[in-house]
Amino acid sequence: MIPFSVLDLSPITEGSDAGESFRNTLALAQHAERWGYNRYWLAEHHGMPGIASAATSVLIGHVAGGTKTIRVGAGGIMLPNHSPLVIAEQFGTLESLYPGRIDLGLGRAPGSDQATARALRRNLMSDADEFPRDVVELMDLMSDQPRQAIRAVPGMGTNVPVWILGSSTFGAQLAAMLGLPYAFASHFAPQQLMQAIEIYRETFKPSAQLAKPYVMLGFNVFAADTDEEAQLRATSMQQAFVNLRSGRPSKLPPPVAGYREKVGPAERALLDSVLSCAAIGSAETVRESLRAFIARTGADELMIACNMFDPTHRRRSYEIASQVR
Image (tube, rainbow, N blue to C red; front, side):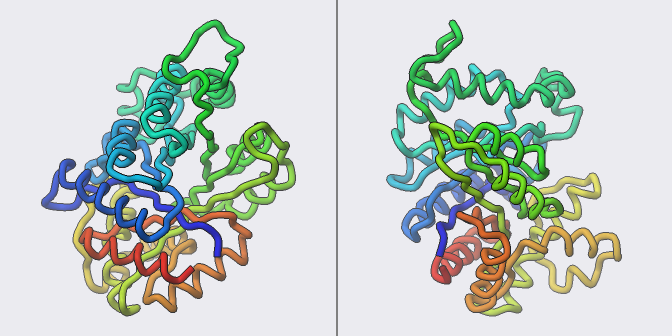
């Protein structure tokens, strides 16, 4: 089976705080390393009461420092929030500290609401439009011989592997044009999945970093010893997702039995969409769902997401997923 990796938002659960989330993140990364996961990515989000990974580069350093072999990176850094030089220095530092283990996934969304994005002191419209230019500038800053006069120290010569992230065809086109690996956020926005994969593979141009297309797809896995137990534990993520899309972002709530039956048709349709790229159940149920998804998409790698309320249950879910490959 193809490689599996971990996507972690370092969730803050009800009754908890960021410090506990960071401890849980490191514990999960150490378990994922033992279970043979390929990479461990953290995502940049701002102003979210249930997500503790806003200072993504700092948290990557925390995880990389507490592990030994697993690749650690950003899934991703929202580049419109930053200057390319700052990110080159941050990831040049990480690569210098943990050589050969750092990934840099880049997205063009702000990872926040507009008010928070404005507080980050960036012009949303122009910077989002300039995303391709910023990606090229950032890669140049980390290259052996930058074309620009500015030097990233550390950063220059580190050649940190860059990925393009996306949930639409825009990212697929850019990744193909630049010859970069492509990670699609099908774990929460699966609508354009197949179209984006097709565009990326058909228009890919080889580069110094990558000779042929490489697609990593987000996929939700909520695994437990029984289907019923997994269905219950998956309701924490379902509640948080409905709250977020309803304009009420929240901490990750405890599971609620029969949650789906308690919401209206609009919320059920929303859950049907996001869970179209998900496996919920026992090991056998998860195995069948994973194999069907890989066969349908031809994914080269899966980035497994799992927001469960109890960190022990979450670690168990990743353990089961690792064993069904």
